[in-house]
Length: 285
Ligand SMILES: [Zn+2]
Image 1 (cartoon, rainbow, N blue to C red):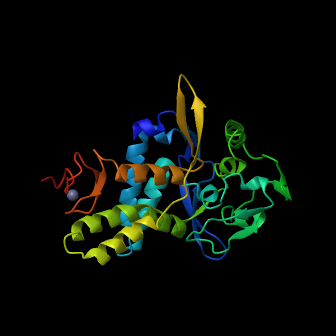
Image 2: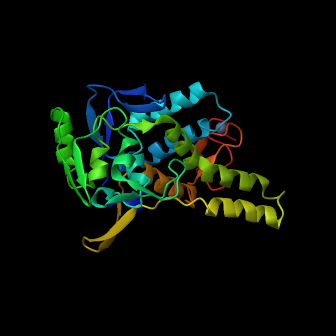
């Protein structure tokens, strides 16, 4: 897994404090608290740990868990690693600010295939808009706010504008969307677990059903480019923490030597020492 991302650089922003807030329609959001301090970090340095944490939260977000536990789990993740960057993961391109409208992949949150940029942005800035004027494919972003916000915008000025905007203090993510997203992230891991558990009991059709379920669950792939160092190398371009998590979790799930698995006893995700390990180190057999 390390080799796969060794030439990629990816920086993300987390704040030291987040808060839950309800908008006028009583929808619950999570966003940086007023005066919270941003910090830039490199998620690829802790790729395995973040992914494992995210998968554990995905398991806690399954329906049978009480709401308070889900809330605690998701809030804990956001405090540790920042928001997921849903705003740049749902559209067909993270450069959507350069287009007249926003075009969306099929997703669990927004039904329309396309919508105006302003309408789309309102999903992520329910408590205060950024000063952006959009006309056709052009836009102008007047960066305001305190020194931290201006410094952040400057630091990420080479990145797609939408990614840069998602680091600003006004950016919020809907709480129920995060719960669904964490659950989706764990879907393949759970599918692979159930498939292995039931394999002997399943007939050919049953197996095909499981196989199709997993195959149908594709995620939005990050883009990549080839960089010429002493030899050509593959460099992934991640524009959201979510796309990084989706890719790394898929790589970990299919790893031939140290795959991520669900423990047969406690159902916690863990990195197995061998492909056949069925129990986590705590339950260890
Ligand atoms: Zn266990």
